[in-house]
Structure formats: structure tokens, C-alpha cells
Length: 362
Image (cartoon, rainbow, N blue to C red; front, side, top):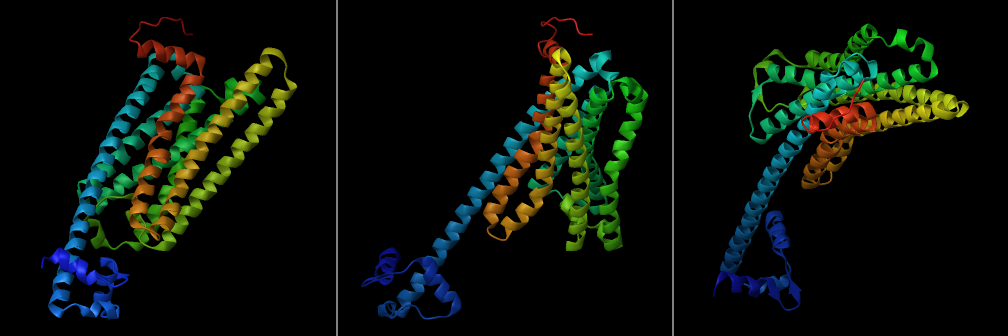
């Protein structure tokens, strides 16, 4: 009798049907299966156990191959998205540097800062993804340097968005002081302040890492991830507390600016009213961009909860979080901002069509 027919005879006995998972669980736990299964000869049981183990091994191999293929497709998809987003950001950066009216105006300079920091984050996060996919280990001290850059510029973008909101607040609510407060020199100082403020969470995380890590750890070879800096659970809590404090302050600033601009817009009339409402929509856009950054900061909490439920679900959720809240906002938000600005939009069209589109921009 073949093993397949033997399995059918032994698994189907009278009115009872046994699944191979249930049977293997009984074998693993050394507990007797239902008495109706005892009609099978001991030799038949051994052959059946062999067959079931083989089926489970084949299923594991097939599942592993499917998972590996899925990971390859996802990595290729990410490469396509990263290249596409970098090309769009490159077009926006070229447009910025080709016109003097852009790199001498505060809001355009801050816009360029977000473009550069987002492009750097796209490159760094994609590089870490490739290293992880191909299991390329590196010494921990090198990974620490890479992580510092990632941590820093992960905060630079939302802080810059907050500075852009304050610039709109000054332009609308304090127009007589705008040229003084938002000069090119002041903007350069503002960029230094942005990087200084953004480095505080990075310094806190590094301090906790240096206080907890042994000297031998720095020479070890490991897969590089930013999460490697979190050695103990309390370090994760400290990082979360600092990020949440930062985002609370930024949300308060954006809401304050929104309320003040709305009051001025309601009191204005004619062309001034139209211009003020446009500034108000810009503040709303900055709030939306900040919301995407905030969701990105909450992703590790969501992933940690999903990890306790199912590993495959955790992998899927982490991939979609990476694409939706890490990659996409770093391109779409700057692109939307550039398209909304009429002056920047026409300049971008000119360079996108290699000078075929002609329009005077001052």
C-alpha cells in the first residue's frame, strides 16, 4: 500500500478526520491520538509520521521561497520608488539654484533645506535596506556614524517645516518686520539653529548608547539598523519621550500660527484677503506634512504590537509603513509645495521641458 493511501486509511477512520498539524502536535506532545486511529499498525503509524513530517518540511520550504521572492520584489519596488523620488527632488533642487530670486528668499531657502534633508534620508534609508537585504554586516562604530546622520536628518525636516510656518506668520502678521527678521543672513542663522535643535534628540540617544555599550561592541560586525542603538527598553522610552516632546512643541507652534493668520485673514479684504487665505492654506499643508512625520514616529509602536501577533503580518506592516510614511512623504510633500507656488511651478516647468516652456520669472 502506498504512503498516500496509507495516510488516507489511517487519518480517515470511521467518522473522524485528522489534520496533519493536529497529528504532529500529538506526536510532539507525546499524547495519544483518538482511539479510532489505533486501528493502524505501528509500522503504518511510523510511515504516516514520516509522510506528515515530509509534507510539513515541503510546506516550510515553499513558504520560505515565497517569502524570499516577495522580499526581492519589494526591494526592487523600493529601488524604483527611491530613484523616481530622487529624480523629482533633483529637479526641484536644480530649479531652486538656477534662479536668484529663489536662493535669496527665506521661504525658498528653507524649502531647499527640506529637499536636501529628505533626499539624504532617501539615500541613507535605502542604503540600510540594501545592506540588510544582502546581509552585509559592518563594524558597529561605522553603523553608529550612519545612524547619527539618519537620526539627525529625520528631525531636520519637521523642525524646518515649523520654521517655514513661523516665516509665514511673520510675513502675514508682522509684514513691516518681515524683511528685517527674514533676511538672507538671518535665514543662514536659522538653518544653524534648526540643525542645533535637531541634534538634541540625537545626542540624547547617543549618550544613552555610549553609557550602556561595552567597548568590545564597537568592533563587532552586525547588520546596521538605527534600532541597534537601543540596547535596553528604557532607552526606547527615552527616545520616544524626546520625540513626542518635540512634536508637541511643533504642533503648538503651527496651531498658534494658524489661529493668528486666520484672525488677520478674516479682518482683511479684497486682494489682501485672497493672499492671506493662501498663506493659511500653506500653514495647513505644513501641518499635514508634520502629521506624516508624527505618524512615522509612531510606526515603531505599531510594529512592536503587531510583532506580538504574527511575524508575517509584522513584516508586511513594516514594509507598508516604510513606503507610505517614510519614502512617499519625502517626495510628495515637497512636490505639492513646489506645485502650489506659482513662481516656482513655472520655473520648474521650464527646466522639466528643457527650456521649451518660456515665461519671465522675477
